Length: 272
Picture 1 (tube, rainbow, N blue to C red):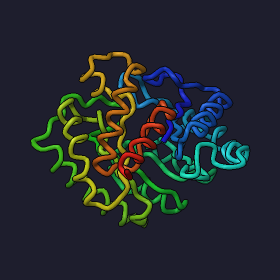
Picture 2: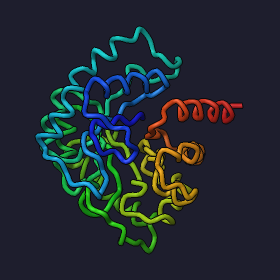
Picture 3: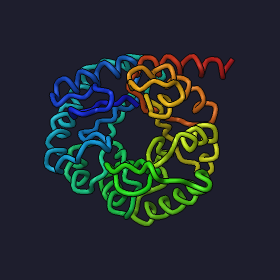
Picture 4: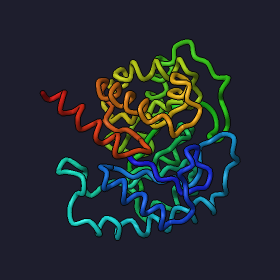
């Protein structure tokens, strides 16, 4: 899953408010092996205030309306025969008003960082035939939760996913349209994040695809003492390797070429 930030405050400094530049970034990621493109108009950074729903919608729609033409510009999967094609378009948003406005324009997946406090987003996905990513977190998005602690983060997460899966199913969303995300760095401290990477296999009990957020995460910077996010790609590859061993199926990354090459080699070694 390649990350395209249609904003001007991405923590990696790779965002753009120009939809043509965002589409060019997506095209390059597809050429480098992306199976999914995840577009987001609002940074999740907690040291930045939220933008309005109207602004978020205005940033997303030009890209979405040009998506089909971008895919049509390729005669075949540009990476290799194993690349998912046509690729999926993921919309990284959590506000129901935005979801209701953009899903009629397309999109295969809503990447929701809100921790699904109520059923509306699941219901909207069900109505539009989209899938939903449920991410573990605590409290409101765009608010720092550095004070949060857990007696046992894995037990807490298992109960969280049990409750949220039941909520999504009650809203009419089928289990086949749900992806789980442990929410690395969201309302978690360094040791919580490392524990989740080490024991991600325990989330296989739900028999749903697991997205492991690995790219340039704060926890990587903490382990390597790298304050600059763009210096963390080697650590990102290490997290991909650990995630593959533990059954994760989707890796959300900035540097798609490095990730795709790593996955291909790791898979070859696994098959050998």
